[in-house]
Amino acid sequence: MENRGYALRYQDLDAISYEGGCACGAVRYRMTSQPLFVHCCHCRWCQRETGASFALNAMIEADRVQLLQGEVDVVLTPSESGKGQKVARCPNCRGAVWSNYAGAGDAVRFIRVGTLDEPDRLPPDIHIFTASKQPWVVIPPNTPAVAAYYKASDLWPKESLERRAILFAALLPR
Ligand SMILES: [Zn+2]
Ligand SMILES: [Zn+2]
Image (cartoon, rainbow, N blue to C red):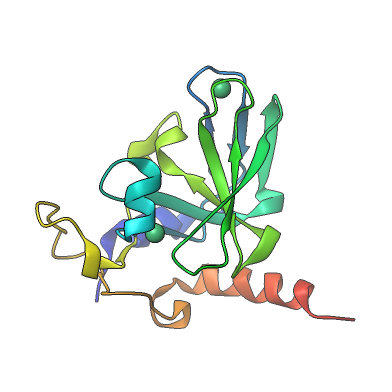
């Protein structure tokens, strides 16, 4: 499977930043580099939680997200895995700006792409849980899509896998 989007995006991996924030403007943040990978999740939990058809999440190391303004309230919310996700919300307008999932723990944030100032810059690298995709959503033929989940080693670009290895090394007990 080929994905032209990230071939372009990942060439200047750390030279680019992205800023975003909640609807009321109290919370502002900056991603200090490209994300690791961008998931478009079509699971029923994401549909219910967004009130829409899918969630679009850019995965990035937590230490590459700077809170520029405000604070976030973290709300434990049920998720597809059954282990829950921690959703970081603006305490004022309650909009969600990112989540942490049990799998990757607090080390990886799933930035809600729609909260970026320029969300068009981060199209999905993969569509996941397409088994419950709403039928009118048509996935572009060049973007990978899987019925449930996938192995990062099969699809992530080399730079992202290297960053992931650094994360895993830091999580190992000493
Ligand atoms: Zn707000
Ligand atoms: Zn989902």
